[in-house]
Amino acid sequence: MTSREGLQAVAEILKGSRRIAIAAHLNPDGDCIGSALAMRLILRRMGKEADVFDRDKVPDNMMFLAGADTVRPLSAAEGPYDVLLCVDCADLQRIVSFSVPEQKEQFDRLLGMCGKVVQIDHHGTNPCYGDAWAVDGDAAAACVLVYDIMGLLGVSVDREIAECLYTGISTDTGNFLQDNTNEGALRVVAAIQGTGFSQAELGRKLFAERRPAQVALISRALQTLRYASDGGVTCMTLTLADFEETGALPEDADTIVNFGRDILGVHMAMLARETAEGIKMSLRAIAPYRVNDVAKNFGGGGHAQASGCTLHGVPLQEAADTVFLALQKALEEQV
Image 1 (cartoon, rainbow, N blue to C red):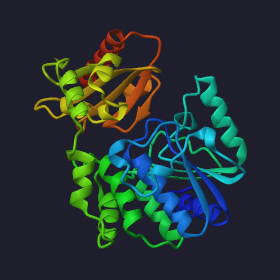
Image 2: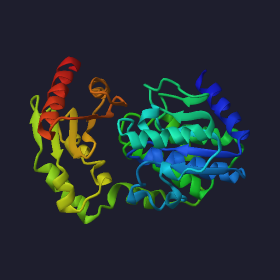
Image 3: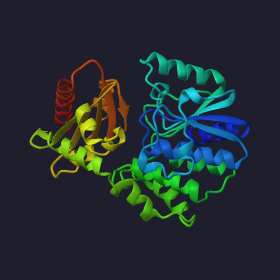
Protein backbone atom coordinates (compact mmCIF):
# COMPACT_ATOMS: atom_id res chain seq x y z
CA MET A 1 0.00 0.00 0.00
CA THR A 2 1.18 3.53 -0.67
CA SER A 3 2.19 5.85 2.13
CA ARG A 4 -1.18 7.65 2.05
CA GLU A 5 -3.10 4.39 1.89
CA GLY A 6 -1.03 3.09 4.80
CA LEU A 7 -1.77 6.13 6.92
CA GLN A 8 -5.49 5.72 6.28
CA ALA A 9 -5.42 1.97 6.95
CA VAL A 10 -3.69 2.45 10.31
CA ALA A 11 -6.03 5.31 11.20
CA GLU A 12 -9.11 3.21 10.46
CA ILE A 13 -7.93 0.35 12.65
CA LEU A 14 -7.13 2.74 15.50
CA LYS A 15 -10.53 4.39 15.15
CA GLY A 16 -12.22 1.04 15.58
CA SER A 17 -10.13 0.01 18.59
CA ARG A 18 -10.78 0.64 22.27
CA ARG A 19 -7.56 -0.55 23.95
CA ILE A 20 -4.18 -0.06 22.30
CA ALA A 21 -0.77 -1.26 23.43
CA ILE A 22 2.04 0.90 22.04
CA ALA A 23 5.43 -0.79 21.71
CA ALA A 24 8.61 1.27 21.62
CA HIS A 25 11.94 -0.22 20.59
CA LEU A 26 14.78 -1.14 22.92
CA ASN A 27 17.30 1.59 23.78
CA PRO A 28 14.68 4.20 22.81
CA ASP A 29 15.77 7.42 21.16
CA GLY A 30 13.91 10.71 20.84
CA ASP A 31 11.83 9.73 17.83
CA CYS A 32 10.82 6.46 19.41
CA ILE A 33 9.78 8.07 22.71
CA GLY A 34 8.28 11.11 20.98
CA SER A 35 6.12 9.08 18.59
CA ALA A 36 5.02 6.60 21.28
CA LEU A 37 4.00 9.28 23.77
CA ALA A 38 2.40 11.45 21.08
CA MET A 39 0.26 8.49 19.95
CA ARG A 40 -0.67 7.77 23.57
CA LEU A 41 -1.87 11.36 23.99
CA ILE A 42 -3.71 11.35 20.65
CA LEU A 43 -5.54 8.11 21.41
CA ARG A 44 -6.44 9.27 24.92
CA ARG A 45 -7.80 12.53 23.47
CA MET A 46 -10.15 10.23 21.51
CA GLY A 47 -11.33 8.56 24.71
CA LYS A 48 -9.39 5.34 24.13
CA GLU A 49 -7.14 3.41 26.49
CA ALA A 50 -3.50 3.48 25.39
CA ASP A 51 -0.46 2.16 27.23
CA VAL A 52 3.20 2.46 26.22
CA PHE A 53 5.61 -0.43 26.80
CA ASP A 54 9.37 -0.51 26.45
CA ARG A 55 12.08 -2.88 27.58
CA ASP A 56 14.23 0.08 28.60
CA LYS A 57 13.50 3.24 30.51
CA VAL A 58 12.90 6.66 29.00
CA PRO A 59 16.16 8.67 28.80
CA ASP A 60 16.42 11.20 31.63
CA ASN A 61 16.52 14.21 29.29
CA MET A 62 13.09 13.23 27.91
CA MET A 63 11.31 12.65 31.21
CA PHE A 64 9.70 16.09 30.87
CA LEU A 65 7.43 14.78 28.10
CA ALA A 66 3.81 14.17 29.06
CA GLY A 67 3.29 10.52 29.95
CA ALA A 68 6.99 9.66 30.14
CA ASP A 69 6.49 8.46 33.70
CA THR A 70 3.77 6.03 32.58
CA VAL A 71 5.95 3.93 30.26
CA ARG A 72 5.99 0.38 31.61
CA PRO A 73 7.99 -2.81 31.00
CA LEU A 74 6.46 -5.45 28.75
CA SER A 75 5.98 -7.72 31.76
CA ALA A 76 3.44 -5.23 33.17
CA ALA A 77 1.02 -5.56 30.23
CA GLU A 78 -2.52 -6.60 31.14
CA GLY A 79 -4.60 -7.54 28.13
CA PRO A 80 -6.55 -7.99 26.13
CA TYR A 81 -5.71 -5.19 23.67
CA ASP A 82 -7.38 -4.63 20.35
CA VAL A 83 -4.15 -3.52 18.72
CA LEU A 84 -0.41 -3.61 19.17
CA LEU A 85 0.93 -0.37 17.68
CA CYS A 86 4.68 -0.46 16.96
CA VAL A 87 6.35 2.91 16.46
CA ASP A 88 9.74 3.75 14.91
CA CYS A 89 10.48 0.03 14.76
CA ALA A 90 11.64 -1.42 11.44
CA ASP A 91 11.61 -4.97 12.79
CA LEU A 92 9.67 -6.69 15.57
CA GLN A 93 12.99 -7.98 16.87
CA ARG A 94 13.90 -4.38 17.74
CA ILE A 95 11.32 -4.41 20.55
CA VAL A 96 13.29 -6.85 22.71
CA SER A 97 16.42 -8.98 22.45
CA PHE A 98 14.99 -12.17 20.96
CA SER A 99 18.22 -13.97 21.93
CA VAL A 100 17.28 -13.54 25.60
CA PRO A 101 14.56 -16.15 26.38
CA GLU A 102 12.90 -14.10 29.12
CA GLN A 103 12.55 -11.06 26.87
CA LYS A 104 11.26 -13.16 23.97
CA GLU A 105 8.66 -14.72 26.29
CA GLN A 106 7.52 -11.28 27.46
CA PHE A 107 7.14 -10.10 23.86
CA ASP A 108 5.23 -13.25 22.84
CA ARG A 109 2.94 -12.76 25.83
CA LEU A 110 2.21 -9.16 24.83
CA LEU A 111 1.69 -10.12 21.20
CA GLY A 112 -0.74 -12.85 22.26
CA MET A 113 -2.85 -10.26 24.09
CA CYS A 114 -3.34 -8.16 20.94
CA GLY A 115 -5.85 -8.70 18.18
CA LYS A 116 -3.99 -6.90 15.40
CA VAL A 117 -0.55 -5.44 14.76
CA VAL A 118 -0.09 -2.07 13.06
CA GLN A 119 2.96 0.11 12.76
CA ILE A 120 4.22 3.62 12.08
CA ASP A 121 7.80 3.81 10.86
CA HIS A 122 10.21 5.65 8.58
CA HIS A 123 13.03 3.16 8.00
CA GLY A 124 13.64 2.18 4.40
CA THR A 125 14.53 -1.38 5.46
CA ASN A 126 11.09 -1.99 6.99
CA PRO A 127 9.47 -5.13 5.46
CA CYS A 128 5.97 -3.75 6.19
CA TYR A 129 4.94 -6.30 8.80
CA GLY A 130 1.59 -6.49 10.57
CA ASP A 131 -2.02 -6.02 9.51
CA ALA A 132 -1.52 -2.41 8.41
CA TRP A 133 1.46 -0.12 8.19
CA ALA A 134 2.25 3.53 7.68
CA VAL A 135 5.83 3.30 6.47
CA ASP A 136 7.64 6.05 4.58
CA GLY A 137 11.40 5.81 4.17
CA ASP A 138 11.54 9.42 3.02
CA ALA A 139 10.06 10.77 6.25
CA ALA A 140 12.66 12.38 8.50
CA ALA A 141 11.10 10.82 11.60
CA ALA A 142 8.25 8.59 12.66
CA CYS A 143 6.80 11.67 14.36
CA VAL A 144 6.13 13.19 10.93
CA LEU A 145 3.81 10.27 10.17
CA VAL A 146 2.27 10.48 13.64
CA TYR A 147 1.32 14.08 12.89
CA ASP A 148 -0.36 13.03 9.63
CA ILE A 149 -2.25 10.20 11.33
CA MET A 150 -3.37 12.62 14.02
CA GLY A 151 -5.10 14.66 11.32
CA LEU A 152 -6.86 11.58 9.96
CA LEU A 153 -8.01 10.74 13.49
CA GLY A 154 -9.52 14.21 13.87
CA VAL A 155 -7.35 15.26 16.82
CA SER A 156 -5.89 18.76 17.05
CA VAL A 157 -2.33 19.33 18.17
CA ASP A 158 -1.79 20.84 21.62
CA ARG A 159 1.30 21.76 23.63
CA GLU A 160 1.90 18.29 25.09
CA ILE A 161 1.60 16.56 21.72
CA ALA A 162 3.71 19.26 20.07
CA GLU A 163 6.54 18.70 22.56
CA CYS A 164 6.55 14.99 21.76
CA LEU A 165 6.53 15.58 18.00
CA TYR A 166 9.27 18.20 18.18
CA THR A 167 11.41 15.89 20.29
CA GLY A 168 11.18 13.13 17.70
CA ILE A 169 11.79 15.30 14.66
CA SER A 170 14.60 17.37 16.13
CA THR A 171 16.52 14.39 17.51
CA ASP A 172 16.22 12.29 14.34
CA THR A 173 17.48 15.20 12.23
CA GLY A 174 20.38 15.94 14.58
CA ASN A 175 18.83 19.24 15.65
CA PHE A 176 18.08 19.94 11.97
CA LEU A 177 21.74 19.63 10.94
CA GLN A 178 21.42 16.37 8.99
CA ASP A 179 20.52 15.90 5.34
CA ASN A 180 17.20 14.26 6.23
CA THR A 181 15.93 17.66 7.38
CA ASN A 182 13.44 17.87 4.55
CA GLU A 183 10.24 19.71 3.66
CA GLY A 184 8.08 17.17 5.50
CA ALA A 185 9.94 17.65 8.76
CA LEU A 186 9.83 21.43 8.56
CA ARG A 187 6.16 21.32 7.57
CA VAL A 188 5.28 19.63 10.86
CA VAL A 189 7.54 21.90 12.92
CA ALA A 190 5.82 24.92 11.37
CA ALA A 191 2.37 23.44 11.98
CA ILE A 192 2.92 22.88 15.69
CA GLN A 193 4.05 26.43 16.37
CA GLY A 194 1.60 28.46 18.42
CA THR A 195 0.70 25.59 20.76
CA GLY A 196 2.61 27.13 23.65
CA PHE A 197 5.73 24.99 23.70
CA SER A 198 9.16 26.63 23.77
CA GLN A 199 11.39 25.46 20.95
CA ALA A 200 14.41 27.08 22.63
CA GLU A 201 13.73 25.34 25.95
CA LEU A 202 13.27 21.94 24.33
CA GLY A 203 16.40 22.41 22.23
CA ARG A 204 18.40 23.18 25.36
CA LYS A 205 17.08 20.14 27.22
CA LEU A 206 17.62 17.78 24.29
CA PHE A 207 20.94 19.00 22.91
CA ALA A 208 22.77 21.33 25.29
CA GLU A 209 22.29 20.25 28.89
CA ARG A 210 24.68 17.52 30.08
CA ARG A 211 25.03 15.83 33.45
CA PRO A 212 28.53 15.83 34.94
CA ALA A 213 28.67 12.04 34.55
CA GLN A 214 27.99 12.39 30.82
CA VAL A 215 30.77 14.95 30.46
CA ALA A 216 33.13 12.51 32.19
CA LEU A 217 32.03 9.76 29.79
CA ILE A 218 32.64 12.02 26.78
CA SER A 219 36.15 12.63 28.10
CA ARG A 220 36.77 8.87 28.34
CA ALA A 221 35.60 8.34 24.76
CA LEU A 222 37.69 11.19 23.34
CA GLN A 223 40.80 9.70 24.92
CA THR A 224 40.32 6.63 22.66
CA LEU A 225 39.79 8.64 19.46
CA ARG A 226 41.74 7.32 16.49
CA TYR A 227 41.77 8.16 12.79
CA ALA A 228 42.15 6.21 9.54
CA SER A 229 41.83 6.85 5.81
CA ASP A 230 43.80 10.11 5.97
CA GLY A 231 41.52 11.41 8.70
CA GLY A 232 38.33 10.45 6.90
CA VAL A 233 37.17 7.85 9.43
CA THR A 234 37.21 7.97 13.24
CA CYS A 235 36.67 5.40 15.97
CA MET A 236 36.05 5.69 19.72
CA THR A 237 35.40 3.03 22.33
CA LEU A 238 33.81 2.80 25.77
CA THR A 239 34.06 -0.05 28.26
CA LEU A 240 31.61 -1.14 30.93
CA ALA A 241 34.14 0.18 33.43
CA ASP A 242 33.89 3.63 31.86
CA PHE A 243 30.19 3.71 32.69
CA GLU A 244 30.64 2.30 36.18
CA GLU A 245 33.50 4.61 37.15
CA THR A 246 31.88 7.80 35.81
CA GLY A 247 28.36 6.95 36.96
CA ALA A 248 27.09 7.50 33.42
CA LEU A 249 23.92 5.90 32.07
CA PRO A 250 23.61 4.05 28.74
CA GLU A 251 21.73 6.97 27.17
CA ASP A 252 24.64 9.26 28.02
CA ALA A 253 26.53 7.64 25.15
CA ASP A 254 23.84 8.23 22.52
CA THR A 255 25.35 11.33 20.89
CA ILE A 256 29.05 10.81 21.66
CA VAL A 257 29.68 9.39 18.18
CA ASN A 258 28.90 12.86 16.79
CA PHE A 259 32.09 14.21 18.35
CA GLY A 260 34.03 11.97 15.99
CA ARG A 261 31.82 12.78 13.03
CA ASP A 262 31.97 16.56 13.43
CA ILE A 263 35.75 16.87 13.11
CA LEU A 264 36.86 18.65 9.94
CA GLY A 265 37.79 16.19 7.23
CA VAL A 266 35.85 13.27 8.73
CA HIS A 267 33.31 11.48 6.51
CA MET A 268 32.43 8.48 8.71
CA ALA A 269 32.58 7.89 12.45
CA MET A 270 31.86 5.09 14.88
CA LEU A 271 31.51 4.54 18.61
CA ALA A 272 31.88 1.01 19.95
CA ARG A 273 30.63 0.53 23.48
CA GLU A 274 30.60 -2.51 25.67
CA THR A 275 27.21 -3.60 27.01
CA ALA A 276 25.91 -6.66 28.82
CA GLU A 277 24.35 -7.86 25.57
CA GLY A 278 27.31 -7.31 23.26
CA ILE A 279 29.32 -4.58 21.60
CA LYS A 280 26.94 -1.86 20.44
CA MET A 281 28.11 0.11 17.41
CA SER A 282 26.86 3.59 16.57
CA LEU A 283 27.77 4.57 13.00
CA ARG A 284 27.48 8.04 11.47
CA ALA A 285 28.35 9.63 8.13
CA ILE A 286 28.16 12.96 6.41
CA ALA A 287 26.24 12.88 3.12
CA PRO A 288 26.80 11.70 0.46
CA TYR A 289 28.67 9.00 2.38
CA ARG A 290 26.62 6.11 3.80
CA VAL A 291 27.05 3.70 6.70
CA ASN A 292 23.80 1.73 6.56
CA ASP A 293 25.28 -1.04 4.39
CA VAL A 294 28.11 -1.53 6.88
CA ALA A 295 25.58 -1.85 9.70
CA LYS A 296 23.50 -4.27 7.65
CA ASN A 297 26.54 -6.49 7.02
CA PHE A 298 26.86 -6.92 10.78
CA GLY A 299 23.17 -7.67 11.35
CA GLY A 300 22.07 -4.11 12.04
CA GLY A 301 20.49 -1.33 10.04
CA GLY A 302 19.19 2.19 10.10
CA HIS A 303 19.50 5.23 7.90
CA ALA A 304 22.14 6.14 5.34
CA GLN A 305 23.92 8.57 7.65
CA ALA A 306 22.90 7.11 11.04
CA SER A 307 22.95 3.37 11.63
CA GLY A 308 23.89 0.83 14.23
CA CYS A 309 24.54 -2.83 14.95
CA THR A 310 25.54 -5.11 17.82
CA LEU A 311 28.31 -7.71 17.71
CA HIS A 312 28.02 -10.70 20.04
CA GLY A 313 30.67 -12.94 21.52
CA VAL A 314 33.56 -10.70 20.49
CA PRO A 315 35.82 -8.60 22.78
CA LEU A 316 35.43 -4.84 22.55
CA GLN A 317 38.70 -4.05 20.83
CA GLU A 318 38.35 -6.86 18.30
CA ALA A 319 34.80 -5.81 17.47
CA ALA A 320 35.82 -2.16 17.14
CA ASP A 321 38.76 -3.02 14.88
CA THR A 322 36.55 -5.16 12.64
CA VAL A 323 33.89 -2.50 12.09
CA PHE A 324 36.50 0.28 11.85
CA LEU A 325 38.17 -1.60 8.99
CA ALA A 326 34.77 -2.12 7.32
CA LEU A 327 34.13 1.63 7.46
CA GLN A 328 37.49 2.35 5.88
CA LYS A 329 36.70 -0.08 3.05
CA ALA A 330 33.25 1.45 2.59
CA LEU A 331 34.77 4.93 2.34
CA GLU A 332 37.19 3.76 -0.32
CA GLU A 333 34.32 2.26 -2.33
CA GLN A 334 32.22 5.41 -2.05
CA VAL A 335 34.88 7.95 -2.94
